[in-house]
Amino acid sequence: IKFLRLFIYLIFLSASSIIYAQTFNAIGAGFNGASEVRCVLFDSTDSRLYAGGTFSTTSNGFPLNYIGSWNGSNWDSLGVGSNGNVCSLIKYNNQILAGGSFSQIGNATVSGLASWDGTNWTPVANFTNNNFTPSVGKLVILNGNLFVLGGFSHVDSLNAYGIAEWNGSNWITFPPVDITGSIGNIAAAAIYNGELYVGGNFDGGPNKNDIL
Image (cartoon, rainbow, N blue to C red):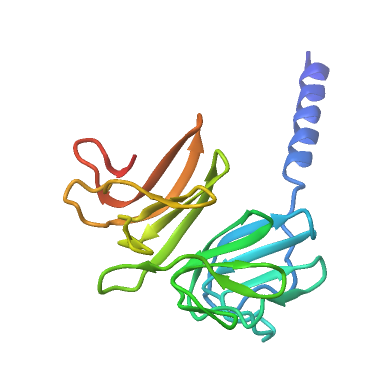
């Protein structure tokens, strides 16, 4: 019995050692100061890891300005980066889309959403937020369509209330998720059982605060 207990203990100890042998490794020099990485995307077509957030440089001073790509050896800037935080990244129609709270990215003047073709940034639609700065907090794809979510009141000339869907030809908008009719701010989204779930800062009614 003692031998059996010792044998079981050694197996457990060995298994525990294997489990906790996992380690995290730095990706290059990391980023400056107290900055955050808010989104990452791996693109298998060019084997690059894209990251967006609040960072301006790598920790050794290489300028990125809120967005960069890792090629396996070094961090690269995407153009000259943006002038504000990058909060969401996704690949759609063979281009990298970046959403956030920026009005300039590369040489393009934008309103929180832009596409990267590998060389240049291009604005995607015109988002506005009444008298405030528009922001895109989350990008998801459902049934081949792109859903843009965040803090904005209009996309192009349409009332949007923080959610807009691009079907490849036109923008589709939705009623406000907030029962007061305010825009609120949608900061998270996921696809579950073929449906879109959203979370953020809004009042959706009884038992619907901040998530729908």
